Length: 96
Image (cartoon, rainbow, N blue to C red; front, side, top):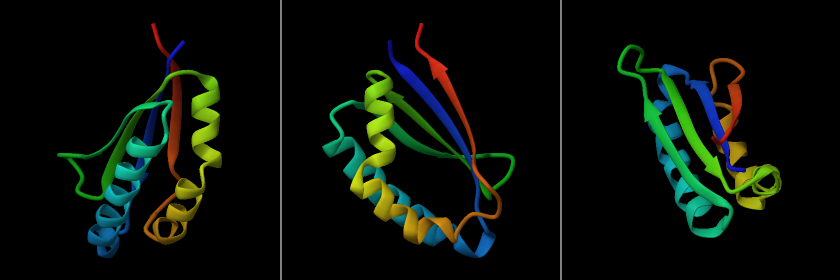
């Protein structure tokens, strides 16, 4: 069964350019190297310029779990974590 993830991120206004640049690099690596990741895309809110969602889809629970342990993902969190204005909100869904 596929796993869907919606991660909501609120970014500090002065960090938006830095966040987008580094996140898009991460997304390219995730899609190229994580075989169990089907979709990994950043979207910016039309209502609030500081709010983003990451839409993700994985082949199964194992692929989703591997994502969090993936070295590129862990390394990317270093320059990205300081961009957050608050803790991320992450919701996990089961594919239908």
